[in-house]
Length: 259
Length: 259
Image 1: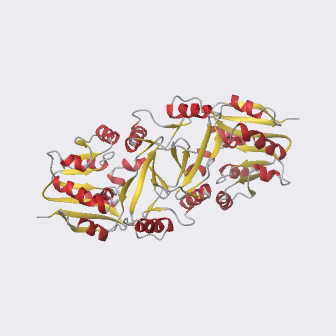
Image 2: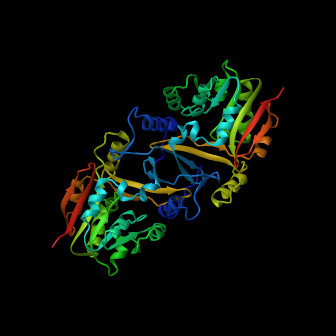
Image 3: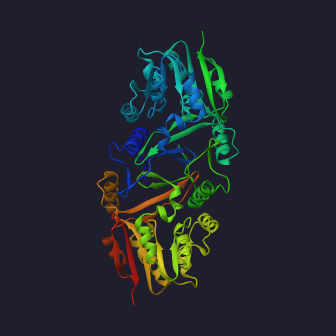
């Protein structure tokens, strides 16, 4: 018999520890009380699949970015909302370029790390919560696979409506996604089938994050090809104007506010 | 609702992938089908605590070892049994020194990787299974925290009896342990208390390993201070002759066959 982990700010705790390792600021995590312990985010899928991701990826500078991240940032214009700001790697680059940017995150710990690293404008909450306020934007960035926040058929309409409510006329969404169907790995293709049998999109991952004693609740996070995304935005205030597949299976979708 | 992972050779699959990354031999694990995915062993504790450990640690050469590993290998003499040979880092060094060594592991995948890396004498199984055969040894190595294989009060006597059955006269055990009680981290001190309330040793970890879609069964793995170890070997065929605590909380215990 084993216990379920405690629900908490997994992402924030993990980034705080990773920031301590990066900078020497704050207590660094140790193994056995003495040797440095690598900071690893753990991502669990509801079929029992699990993966570890070294936290350094949230801190890498532009010189180590994937090419699509550069092209995404190059497309940003006007007032930018960086959705899921994390440790601020994208927001910091935009600030350096003189582009006005606000970082949004549901993780208080992530916001603390972004603040410590120099991100100036930060907001705590979901896009829905933020839309209740007065701020309006020209560009929404969903990088680091954060197109996934669209979750699936059920959530997509509300998510896109919240972004429309936050949008200035002519606003754009730059979303980085991954086509999950270009694999023959049975661990993944079997999962896609299982999802479809349950009336879900194939790449509608059901995940939770874990770090040490903490876990998030289970949540949906969508990996979908651009063609599937077209279906999801139908009937919303957004239209797809470009898909950059130069780094397939990773891609950048650009959506523009209609009218 | 989420599913339990499938039971399998977690350690072997993980080492196979890590070996592919190290050498370029065999398919390397990829994220999203294209970018290299770091190979990380996941260790889950029965209170919901979880940690990721980069697999590279099983491949590091002597130049990157902790000092106690060097001192352990320096103590090896005669016919050596490396218990939990893993990817063979200790056995390979002993072979280089001309010390006759056999690597034992319950993981077939680990044995395959050790074989591919050049370990010449390998045995599949537990110490109990191996004791049923004819091989006898002068030194038993339990490195990489593998003193933990003693599990706890219940298993200790049988484990030590199996090693005694495998032993030549005057044989020694060199076991690397970690004192778990030198922490004030409530995540750990609380776990120790919980264990004691259940009649277990404080550092008697209940763990399972996970890698991608696979998990091991839950098993006990003991972290104990040397003083606790003294109690566990009482009444066995072994006596403690030295404890090297130069790298506390990590230590090397040397046990010698009595008589």
